[in-house]
Length: 114
Length: 116
Image (tube, rainbow over the protein chains, first blue to last red):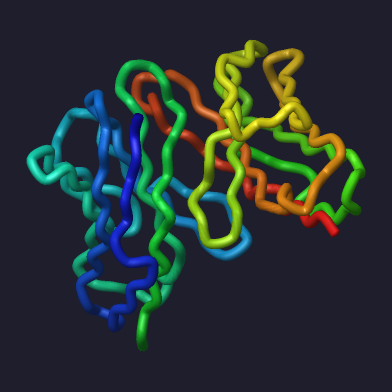
């Protein structure tokens, strides 16, 4: 069984400040990990994915995440927040053995303070 | 590539009625997924097709739910005898096993169902 825990259902940062959204996973097999962003009344857009290549993954819109097996973490960061980053962010896990179904966390709502 | 499309975008129905949603995946994608998202939660997996074969169904998918993908292209999700607990956003996603896109699921905008 796989699961994802996102610490902090709401995160607020000032424009230009560091964004850090936390994700910890549990998986009995080597995981593949994903971050998705969801804007109001829209579907999910893939920001980045980890599929056992480089542990530091760069995604779209300046986001990146680092896979840390020892900490079972896959935190999402962005050096400088922009107003357009305000959205809901979901971390998700799937297994690496062909079953692609995603198990999502409960999400973190990011608010940017002008 | 026009992305994943879903119709309708919004559906309001009375309890006990049947509803059907449609998902059109990205044209070359052979895998199609349905998820359900309730307010304040992350999406939950419902079912998955590879081409026309339904390979997995979640325990969340009660007997009132049925999904089809008859020609391996578009898919439909039907809910019979709707209940208020069925109110949610129903999301469709598709993927292919291309070398650079493996495991990337692309989501549609969703169908928001409200059962009154």
